[in-house]
Amino acid sequence: MKPNAPISARLARGKSLRADLPRAKQDYWQPSSDRPDPIATLQAADRGRVAALLPIKYGRMAVSPFGFFRGAAPVMARDLAALPRTGLLVQLCGDAHIRNLGAFASAQGNIVFDINDFDETIRGPWEWDMKRLATSFVLAGRESGTADRRCRDAVVVLVESYRSALSRFARTPFLELARHRVGRELEARPIDALLKKAERSTPLRNLQKLTTREGGVIHFANRPPLLQRLTGKEAENVLASLPAYREMLTPERRLIFDAYRATDVALKVAGTGSVGTRDYVVLMFGFGEDDPLFLQVKQEMPSCYAPFLDEPPAAHDGQRVADGQLRTQMTSDPLLGWTTIEGTHYLVRQLADHKSSVEPQDLSGSSIVEYARVCGEVFAHAHARTGDAAALAGYCGKVDSLDQSLSRFASAYAGTATADHAALLAAIRSRRVVAAAV
Image (cartoon, rainbow, N blue to C red; front, side, top):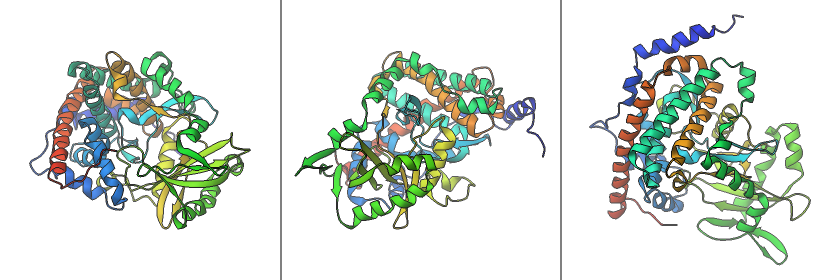
C-alpha cells in the first residue's frame, strides 16, 4: 500500500489550482440573463412537504433579506453550481450561515461550539460553504444595523481565520486534528453569550415550554400550527419507527435510549428552510417526571446540491445527514441516528439539548468581527477533517487575495439575495405565494 503523498506535494497541488481558478476570480458573481426564477426554484423544492405549513416558511422568509437567504439554499445551490470550481472537495455543511453554528452538549456533557445544521450536507467544493457563510455575514450584519464596511471587514477576518487555521491543520497529525477543539470561543463575546444560553436550554426547560398536565398526565401542549399534539395512526407510525432507530445506535448509546419510555408525540415547526418537512418530537421519561428526554424525528429531503454534483444519490437521506454530521463535528449528539416512516427518510436526534444559536442582533458593533474569527476556524476544522487540508491550504495561500475576493463576492451576492427577497414580496402581494406571519 502506497503512503499518502507528502505535505509538500499536496500543498503544491493546491497551489497549482490557482492557475485554473485564480483566487482573485473567486469574487465573480453576476446573475445570468437566463437565471431561473428564484420563486419557481423555491416552489420546486417544496414538493413532498406539508402544503398547509408552507405559508409559515414564506412568512418567515419575507421578514428580511437574511430571512429569505436562510430559506433559499436551493436558490444559492443553483447559482453556485454555475460558477467555476477549484475541484477540492470536502463534506459540506451545505447551508452555511451564521445561525447554523451554535452551542450544544457533547457526548461528555461539555458545552461546545460547532456547526450544528446538516440538512443539506453532501461532498462538494469547499468554496460553496465559504461563499454562503460569507454572504450571511453581510446580510445578518445589515439586519443588525451594522455598516456595510464593518460587514465586509468581518468577511475578510472570516476568510483570514479560515486560511490561517488550514495552514496549521495541514501540518497537524490527523489523530490530533480529530480531537481538536476550537478554543477561541471563550474569548469572543457572542460565543460566550451562546454558551451561557446553552447551559440554560435543558430538557426540563423544554418540559415547561412544550408540555401541559391534564388529569395528572404530562403530554405535549396543542398550539397549532407551531405545535400540534398527535394521536392515532400518525403518532403510532412515529413510535413504530423507533426500534429500527435503536438498532443503529452503538451498544453504549442503546443503554441511554433503553432507559427512557416514549409517552407522547407532536408535530413541531422550527427554523425557516425546513418548514414544511415533517418534524416530529417524541416525549420520553426515564426515572420519573424530573428525567425527561425529547427526541426530534425530522424528515430529510435530498440535498439541494445533489443535482449539481457527481455524487450518487443517498440511499437514505437521514443517514446522509447523520453521517455528514459525524464526519464534520469534533463531537456529536450521542443519540444521533436515522429511521424510516412509511418509506420516508428521517433523522433522529435530541431536541434542543443545551442548544443555542446566534441572532443577527447579537452581532452589532465589533461582535460581528469576533464571531467571524471563530467561524473561520470552525469551518477550517470541518473541511480539514473531511478534505485534504494541505491542498486547501496550498490553494488559499498566505496572503489576503482570497480574503478580499470572498468579501467582494459576499457583497455582490447579498445584493442578489436582497433582490430575490423583493421578488418574494411581490409574489406574496400578487398571491402567487401565500405567506403567514406566525
